[in-house]
Length: 342
Image (cartoon, rainbow, N blue to C red; front, side, top):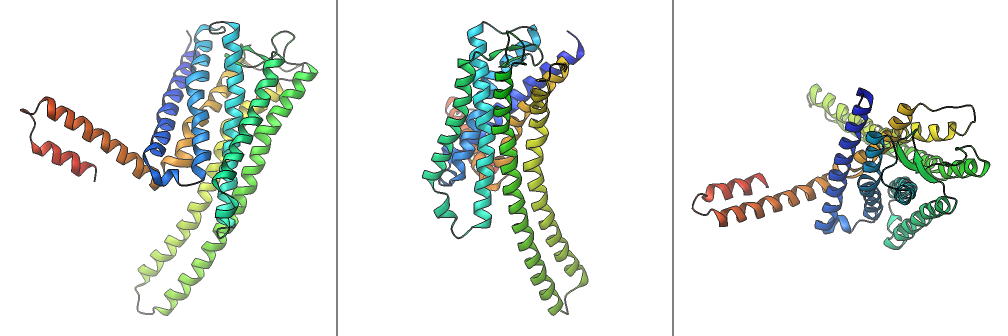
């Protein structure tokens, strides 16, 4: 085993572990918090977490075995199933991100009519379309027998094993697949978040004007207080811009190398280096481990729900230990657990 392959294997394991832990944490927050379940965007987040968890359970271990063994893991049927799962899950994840961006756009641009424009029924219909869209490409891939092990990516993926990935129908399928998933989702993300950023900057400017006028009226206020208030207004505007760049930038950084590589390899004279193919595949997997932080876990509602779940688990373990070793534990342990969770 050489160093590049070892690093790739380690990166796949790390990405899989982080992805499973973070996405399971998101699902756990939803199961334990009625507040999160009452929000319509939670349906899109659950759908995204569902895809990321299955990627971490099915596709990432299969790719790890492909890198470690240098050949397909198990048999042909297993490899075809993993390839179809990858097509379905990656497309479903991208469409979920697009749905979240549209939901954010409606909530910010049309706040008064948001509840009527985005209801639970509407969200379920969008998720149903996402499944239908993803399932259609997976079914076509299965019927055309385009799921096989690719040595370029060391994984079971969309691949025409018989005559190489350069047939006319295969090229059309590949272009349509990435065009209807990556390209359309990128356009939707850019449109929605640019609109959100414009509205956010407009509101920040209004707040800035009101703040400046108020500070000018307060002639007795210390200059340092005025500077602090203006600095906070500037940070608020920069924070909104940073979030938008994170949403769009993470999508481009993690997915575009793999998508561009899959499109470039359709040219007959192009040969994709193996390490580049595997690296681009691992980079697309890494998006599944960052999605919970980008969309969920850094928000106060999710942190509060996660902390309450962890504290509940700690209390249960403490009481079990207390009942089993009542002679060795005292009430100070119970007070410590209660204080750490408040």
